[in-house]
Length: 172
Image: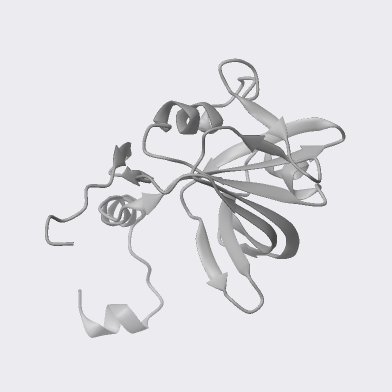
């Protein structure tokens, strides 16, 4: 690629961009909420901390998501940080046309009503803080109102289109 192609506003092709991003491992969360008394949720691998003061987190959701309109209408949401043994749960919440909260999913209502998934590493209860349309996604920023750490085991990771586990370097 020449310098002129970098400055002319030309973007990399989608297939190459997708392949490049696939080599980056990311953590996996399930975002849940209650909308009109009905639990909703989706898997996100774009979760990130944003700020300590105030405590903010973010995730991105595809604008074409059928879950987003109900999730976006909720007055709060929960971030369920998945553990390494919860790949089936992550896959379930990534599927379309399935009752994500039916058995074998185990959950309970949180303090404000958002579903909290059982056996996760941690829960964050968030209030909507800001949203913005960015490309073909919606950036969602939440103010963390409550946090509970349940177990500090290994995280579930997403890498090259598959779920996997973290292995600590022996020198760590």
